[in-house]
Image (cartoon, rainbow, N blue to C red; front, side, top):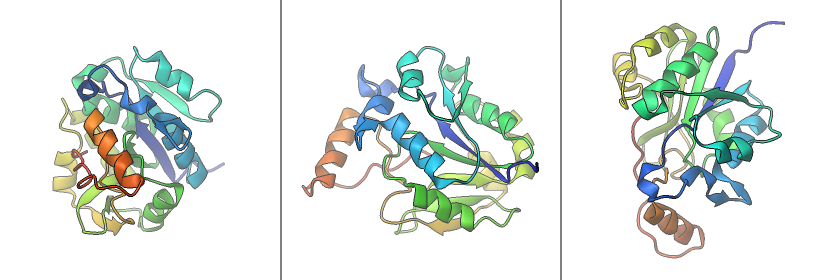
Length: 208
């Protein structure tokens, strides 16, 4: 059997430090904890194996993924920032392209993942944008760039890689690619907008 062309990683090892004691990845979305909802969308896309990065001290997140065909990548050094998860994801995806998305982006759908993958040419990174052109997530990295992840550090993510290897951009509907929710206020505003109320602009995402 040939190796998968694409592997997908959900970044779920963050500390939810801005939730003032809550866990954003356990917030209910469409009847499920957010981390489970996101993993289900990635599985439904049917693009390849799915893994979730997880911190060692959040058993509730592990429990939320129960029964799903996803690999758990425990990140012992999760407190060091996103780069720890990205390094582990790159090791796991060796030989395949890597689709990466933060777990706190509740508007992304299986169709969004498929749309992004359909634009991947096998050579250049691919990055989703909002309808207004704002860069966001997911991002697909070709296999040739994965060794560069070993040099990532702290919470800077893969910005240095994308700067040196500019991505092709693919537009997703609305603000799907840029809505991430980090605080109780973000969640309250997002839910108000979903109910058709006035809630301001969607939170601008951190970079990957």
